Image (cartoon, rainbow, N blue to C red; front, side, top):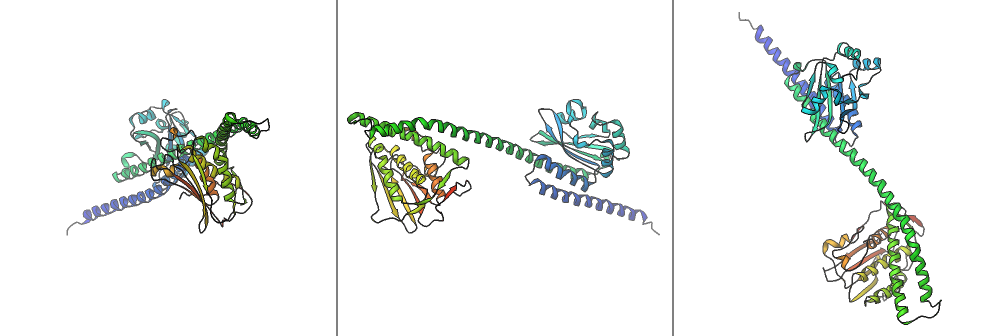
Length: 463
C-alpha cells in the first residue's frame, strides 16, 4: 500500500502558507484603505501621525510604531506620535519615559547618521543602536525581554530623494522571519504614509504662511487708514479755502486768476477722491465699510454729479452732456453718498481716458431697474480688459499715457453696486473706439432704509 502521508503533509503546508499569505494581503489592503482615507484629510503632521501609528500597530501586530519628522536645520528627528503594544506601554509607564517625548539628534548616533546619509532602510537587532543614550540600558533590556522586541526597522520617508521623516517599526521577530509578501506589505503602506505626511507638512506651511499674510495685510490696511486720514486733512482745508475764494468771500476775482483757481480746485478734488478711495479700500478689506440706506432720487444725484464735474471736462476741452429721461423716474432705496461716488467715478474715469470728443451720460428705466450709462470717446478697451477694469488696482493697457491713478475707482464702484444688489459692467468695440461704463439698480430691492455693515461674503456679479 502506497504511503500518502508525505504528499498530504506537503499539501497541508502549502495551503497553510497560502492562507497565511492571503490573510496578510487582506490585512494590507484593509490597512491601505484606512490610510488612504486618513491621507485625504487636511491634518497637521502631528494629528496625521496620531491617526496612522495606532492603526498600523494594531492591524499588523507590531510592538512599536513611531512616526518622526525630520528637522533639517537641527539635523534631528522630532517625534510626532508613537503607538505601542500593551506590554511595551507598561514598561514605558514603569520607567516614566515615553518614546513620543524623545528627540533624536543624528549627530550622536551612527545608526541615524547612516540612515540620513544612505537614505535607505535601517535595520538592527540591538535596541541601543536606535535609542543610543536617550533611553536607559535597563529599560532597553526590559523592552527586549518582557517587551518581546527582537528587531527594529527604520524607514526614511523620502519625497524627491529628500528626507521628510522616518517610520520606526519594532517587531517581535527578526527581519529574516518576514516573508516576501510581508516585506511588500510594509513597503506599500510606507509609501502611503510618506505622501500623506508630505501633504500635511505642505498644508501646515501654507496655513502658517496664510496667517502671516493676514497679519501683514491687516497691518498694511491699518497703515493705509492712518496715513490716508493724515493725508486727507491738508487738501480738505485747501478745498474749503478755494471754495470760499471762488465764492468771492475774500473779494471778487475773475479772468485768468479765477480760471487758475478752478483748475487748482479740480486737481485738489481729484486728490481728495484718491485718498477717499484708499480709505474705502482699507475699510472693505477690514469689513468695516458702512452703508446708510434711504429713499433717494438717482436722477437728482446724476444731475448734481455732472454739474460738479463740468469744470474738469472743460479743462480738457471735452463736452460733458447729460441726456435726461423724458419721463420721471421712481425713487429707490440706496446709500446716496456711495451711489454719488459710483456716478462720479464713472464720469471722472471717462474724462481721464478721453483726449477729445464728448462724455455722454444717460439714465433710463427698464422693466425692473434704473440703468445709468457713461459713454466716452476715449482709448477704448480690448475684450480681456473689460472684466479686469473692476478688479482692485486694475488698469487697462497704456493707461499711464492717459491718466495717473491706482485703479481703485471702478473696483469701489463694483463693491458699492454689488452691495445694492445691482450689476455693473463695461462695453467697448476695441482700442480707439471709446467705452461705455454702466450700472443698474433694482427698483424693487430688499434693502430697507437703515444702517448696515458691508458683508465681505456677498457675491459680486459683473454683467
